[in-house]
Image 1 (spheres, rainbow, N blue to C red):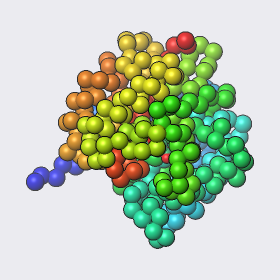
Image 2 (image 1 turned 120 degrees about the vertical axis):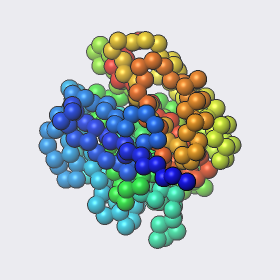
Image 3 (image 1 turned 90 degrees about the horizontal axis):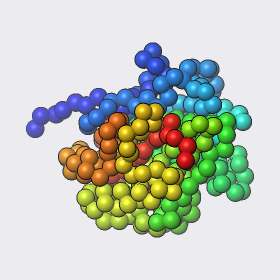
Length: 304
Ligand code: 3EB
């Protein structure tokens, strides 16, 4: 068999001269760079974070240098994140985890270890009731050996949404790990004349159970149903109509590269529209029985 080498996803921030963060995630098809904030400029480096500003958005990216223990790395990196936030409010966090489905030295799955450190940091900073401030997020595997975290925060309080078809992730039962994942299903930022919608990584989970373990096609169906419900709640159609100003970015994480054709065909038929930017990525997903996850970011949508 011929080995095909793929480019890695670049998280680009700012214009062509802006920074491009390499994430250790192979791009199977579609755009190899995602640039959600094309007008951002670097404002400063603080601790492990590089910080950028685009109007009322603060954007930050950091890598944890020591990832021997992801409980500790996540706890530390999130404490640093809260430190640099100042008076801004979190609207989206992207997490890229090394060896996400492998056990750590204590036998705890790396994703669960990460969730533990993340929850501890949220709780120690925001106190009990921290669930109210949890933003949209995603947490997927990377071939890099570093934990990479990027965030977007805003001057205003975003509205955070839950999907009635799904147990809030922060209430998942203990069988999924010692501390549940800390995120909301979607976060929406309202500005004076437009709105920005951040839909979390969305997969085939109903209540708190994985649907159709290891079955990609059935999982796509359930994922699309979840997306439809959460997007409707956020005031968005599943498929966009033409819009001059709105920008939709879709990232699709695929566990088995051989599923690319199936996944891309299905999403072309049921989700994607003209003007969408889409990247198909080879990545492990936080539950080992899940094969696909989709995240959507809609910037500069019209106010309702
Ligand atoms: C899920 O619904 C699938 O831990 O930050 C999706 C989005 C998932 C974010 C996270 C995990 C996270 O539980 C996995």
